[in-house]
Image 1 (cartoon, rainbow, N blue to C red):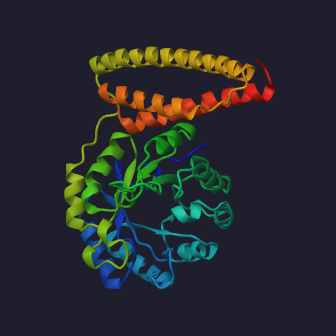
Image 2 (image 1 turned 45 degrees about the vertical axis):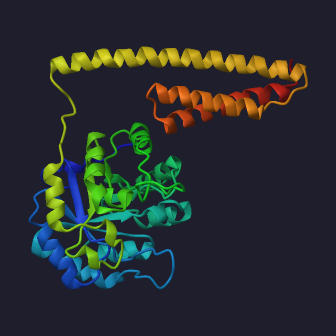
Image 3 (image 1 turned 120 degrees about the vertical axis):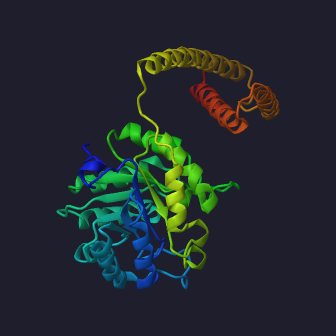
Length: 360
């Protein structure tokens, strides 16, 4: 699957590409005041604003709709910034194209619905316009890939993914859990696709934008989408996560854009470390295979003696012991707990297969 690099569809230095603007277009004066301030920041190439806002409950501010298109036309004429808006329905696409919008983005609540994605994709058939696809609300990589594939199959080659984090049940410093491993896997499975990060929605707080943005760049993401408002405390939507253009400029000035490759000495030392990692990984695979072979043997022994597969007390004791040892070794307990759970689930599955086959 071929994707057009960002530098071929957005002029100028686009590493990183910065898209900025308010969560919602609220008034013409708010849009223009914010846009003119953003136009003074060299890194900002695209102005964003939500016109149709998908709200959880009726009665909340749901955007100004089509009326805001004229304001964005003014933004482009007066500042030279490209413009982008969220579309969720085919008629949004039609109105955006008629209104001269340069780039479309598809939000997390739309991406999660294959029916909506199919309708949107078909409405884009034959239209040459860049499309940004946010990750679905839930951490489902297949849904994200499927949404991108639908857009691509309808002739769009200028596509980028936007990582905006995932809904989480447990309490966390983040509004939406970053789960960086998911966009990393997206980049592995879809080579060449540009990936941007939305620190505003991941953090949900102004104080977290800097660190999230830096981490995204350190993971070789191509750009950032950051919600920016000339008076964020008075914003009608997502006030806590919006920043002023002045704050955005300060954040961007502090970001470190690291090299993707080092000098010869660096590459040699890095290759040595990578070799060590490879050897450790091979040993882990060998040990995991041995552990599962023992699980198979345990399953046959339990079957022969008519003993249940799950020994809950044993599992509790094992889990507590391994977590304690891992903590002493300096391992992150959440990581270790997840790993132990996966290994245990696979062991149970192997023993279940033995029982179902009736083999001792």
